[in-house]
Amino acid sequence: MTKKRVLTGINTTGTLHIGNYVGAIRPAIQDSRDPNVESFFFLADLHALIKCQDPARIERSRMQIAATWLAAGLDPERVTLYRQSDIPEIPLLCWMFDCVMSKGLLNRAHAYKAAVDAATAAGKDPDADVSMGLFSYPVLMAADILMFNAEEVPVGHDQLQHLEMARDAAQRFNNLYATPEHPFFVLPQATGGSSIEVLPGLDGRKMSKSYNNVIPLFEGGRAALDAAIARIVTDSRAPGEPKDPDSTSLTVIFDAFATPEERENFRAELRSGLGWGEAKKRLADQLDREIGPMRARYEELMAHPAQKFCRKAPARRVSLQRPSWPNCVMPWASEASPKSPHLRQLKRRRRKCSARPSSSTGKRTGASTSSSFPLRATNCSFPKALSPGGMPASGSAA
Image 1 (cartoon, one colour):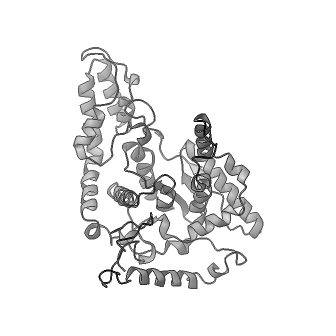
Image 2: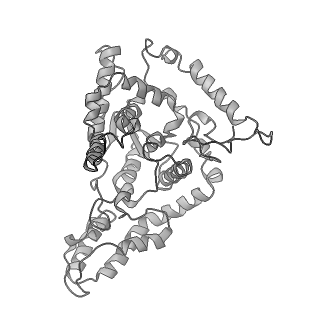
Image 3: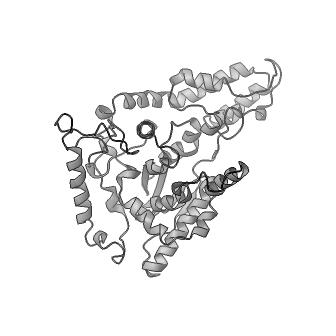
């Protein structure tokens, strides 16, 4: 029986909060345990460059997110976990899609239109704040999805348009280079990740770092969790007065971590006069019962990544799991020769670069101290197990 391919990616521009965990991480990990599913998880560090050009921030975020997935229960023995920038075929496929997708379609992308509207409202040129990365973001997302012919992609409502654009890219490419009987790409389908897709933040709006209303998942420990929950907006009713459970985001957050029976009991206690302070303490205890053990594992991974999980997963050449390319477009990457000279040459080049003597000391070094490329931060130590094929991770020794 052929396994269904499911792909999940997450941007690497910051730390994760409980909204990310409830809406994406927890359901994705649960789905990855299905024996009939082949799961792909990636760290979208190329996408991160659209908003962030700080090498240290991107590198730390990649480590934090990888550690979060593993601490939350992702099994690297069962899934393919990789870093987007380690797969050279992804930006190559992105360019190929650039050449077949229409500008008119990309003009309708929500993120681009929002940037144009904001610039216009500020009295600036419509494209003043638009980079080509922002404009062609849906094309790179299409390459991410179609590179491994993912059949399902868990996305929220804000990403549905991008998935439709990925389907459009697949259809255009198939029409140009394939026959109806033997298409190169499948058309991916959107799936809902969680029954609670959007978790409200401290002020009732969508939980988002942009609104500064998040509850941290692991960072800061229990103290940060308690401090954030204490800021949840509630009404001024005193202890002993009946409360409306639906008047605050506190109950929605509680529901995301509780059983049906616990939810009913919590709401009944609020109606009976449970004080908001005690309710917030119970919420913190409820969350900590689930994420507390994960936090301990996360802190262990972040403190000792090389010893604890760098080499746990077997090396996997994820770039060889791509679909067969049309020879007229990519003759060096045909199905008949999966271990192409291009890939072998790339591997040799990276090993040679990682062992190049330092100009100042003459010693072999894994990372140049003068490196400024955004995805190659100084002294990077990304887990080798998460680099495809056991190739040296960016900035680490061979």
